[in-house]
Structure formats: structure tokens, C-alpha cells
Image (cartoon, rainbow, N blue to C red; front, side, top):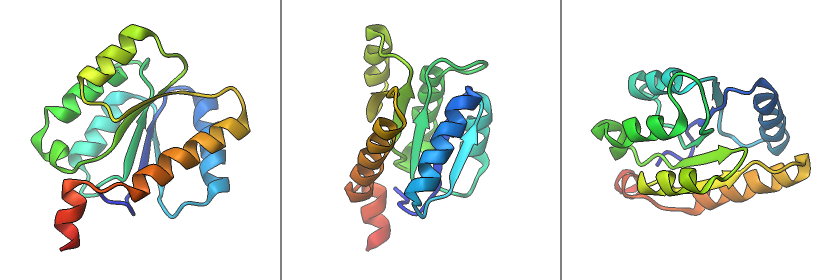
Length: 144
């Protein structure tokens, strides 16, 4: 895990992108925040970029390639899997079938977007700070 890498947000709703952008700007983390409007675009970036992201926050319901399909492609790509990128779903609702599907694909978290700016900010702080403290096999390997 590259704790200084970018935070990837895959979200097709422009209003949600803007809201998350405001939250990350206010929190002022050192990580660059990169937005993608669909799963195909994000997958191309993840596969072709030399940059190792710190964290992926992905919506589930998206055009072209939904979040569950994207997660499947990420875990089936050995190079991406070895990067130990925390992959979390960040979506509007938690239908039981989506939660079960997500965890069956080794998702590291499933979060429902809060309905207020302050709750959203608190949730993002908890998520980012948790992963900043967490160790992964790749992170430990690079630290030696």
C-alpha cells in the first residue's frame, strides 16, 4: 500500500464528485484526489499508470462497468492485486445483495454516503485515518 499515493474516487454523479472534492480539499490530506466518472476509465488508469494509489472509493451503480464488475477485474489482475490497494464501496444505499456481492469479492469496506456534509467529512476522516495506520504486505515489503 502506497500511503502517499493518490486517492481514486470512481463516481458517475457530478454532484457527489463535487461534494467529495470539497471534503477532501477541506481535510487537506497530502494525497492527490483523482476522480473517474466510470469503471472502464478507472480500470484503464489503474492498469496503465505507474502510480500506486493509496485508496479506491468506488460507487456501485455506474455506467459501462459497475463497481462490482470493476472490483472483479481488479482482483483478477495479478499486478493490481499485488499492489494491495484498499478498495472500498462508497454508495447511496446498501442493498443486501450488493453487500453480499461486495464481500464475496474481498472488498475492504462498504459505506453508505451520509446525507450531511459534516457526517460525510467525519466518515472520510475515519476511512483515511484507518488506512493510514493499516499495514499491508506490500507496505511492509517496501519499508525494509
